[in-house]
Image 1 (spheres, rainbow, N blue to C red):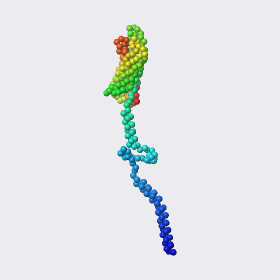
Image 2: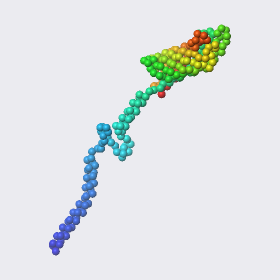
Image 3: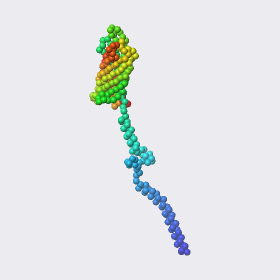
Image 4: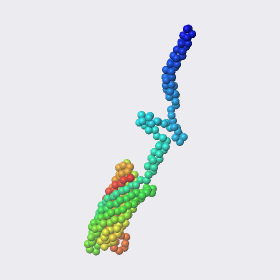
Length: 247
């Protein structure tokens, strides 16, 4: 009888120990998992031999940040360099009125529009090319004969500008231009339907921004076809307004 009781107590003890151990196992596993997570080092990745911090999608979404890789940084730097070295295009439009002067028998005024694009700089001189549209009004009285000298002209043009800084955003220049003009009729009267328009004079340029400028010039001009015969050239002076923009 006593022997059976002892066996029962042993069996009961074994079962109790098993139950206790089974109840402790999940807690131990969870504890080990937390311990391993706490002891694990921060994750990093290497891009082209440089260690860079790595953010998982979960952490990036939580912080609202995106970790840039070395490749992305190199691409941004490359794009910035290309933008800085990108060639610029500077255009200038000039509108002017030139009053006929210095000839008693040639009374012709010019209303001109010039459009130029900057080609290059040579030391302090800039080279521009473009075109000229001209509207001439007036008449001549050579040999006592009245000749109408109204005409419309169009042709290519070249400008050389010597520019120097003055004060602040203001610079000064000397502009010299030449245009080959083709007219819709003989101009002036008793002339030819082509000629040359030469202009020269000082210009004040105000650089409002790094890309925009406005200018005012006082110019002397001479128009003629360069021939010994049928060359009733004429001169004049006037003002020119200019607007420039760099793209």
